[in-house]
Image (cartoon, rainbow, N blue to C red; front, side, top):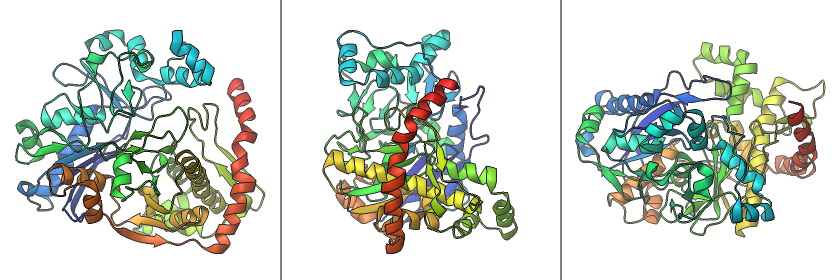
Length: 510
């Protein structure tokens, strides 16, 4: 199976066999990672993604000697929420608006009529207003009306790349995560009477037909086959967004198994056949398993903080890593070791970017407890601890909403490669923290979709049993567990409610 995984900063082409063993991997980094024509904007030329996919895939055959004729199926997983306007030929009309873009239309007002009265009654009218302000379709319709009129299809990155691979205007239902009129419970476009059509500002004819996860999107076209250096006709199997695939690739198929995603956005997820909103009135996203849902809670720009710290404060570690030929992250693990558990009382709240409800749009990041004894090491440890504390709070919310106790913990994503982060996670959650057997869990999840879709495995339970297995396990240290539990209950769990009024006032001042 060839899994294509397109993230925020690179595209990876990875070949797995039916046992989940990685046979080859090639990566193409985007240059630049993204463009920001205005403050808060994040855009990228869509052709960069396709060219990166082609370059990475060809490297598997040309540089690593793998045989493309042996590929039984292809699957695609991408960053979520990145949108593209396509013309009738499938060509982009403007740069893609990335998922981390912060442009808004604050003049959209609120939904009226019966829907508006209902939202006001249940206290979510501000949440719906924020949805409308954040919806890229509303911004495009107001700011670039001529371009919007020429837009034949308004698609996510997955839809654009699916068109490049198959020549068809179609996308996976598992990739529809964003400000569009999608029915998350039915895994289909919303009914005609649904409020989302009014809120998202996207007409039905601009949206793609959707294919359920695990079914065929189409055969690889001859044009795409030539670009990728592969035979035409190989089936492209519908997969899901990168976080959903990461959960599947980590083997978190049961509702009592939680998967932490330590990526640019940090997440905690469980998989369930029952639709449950972990945060009330915010949807459960499509899982990478047909008819299933992920109870996802996000810490927006969670492990982005590690990159921020590396850029702003870790010049000594960068220079030492360069001199020794080792990753900077390895040197940062040595830095963490200089700070004791609890970072000498330094507590960090990782709300560098606001949420919709919990935390709300007023949220800010906070670090409290500074004294003259604190060092860079304490600050870095507090970042890792703060993210884990926030995700522990997410576990508690998921357990309350589902009624199911989390009994196993898997950790995937770039941050999982840090042994310090893994040990902190095990200690804060008071559970063994297990890595998947391969680092590329998102691509493995997509490959599982391909394996089931082409019949190499009969169903997802069999595929997960065959293709996933435990990697390194980090066990909690009892003394650390007791300390972190006190810090969480007496400190971290109280921070947001105490600081929320101040955040609102600061927002007004700014």
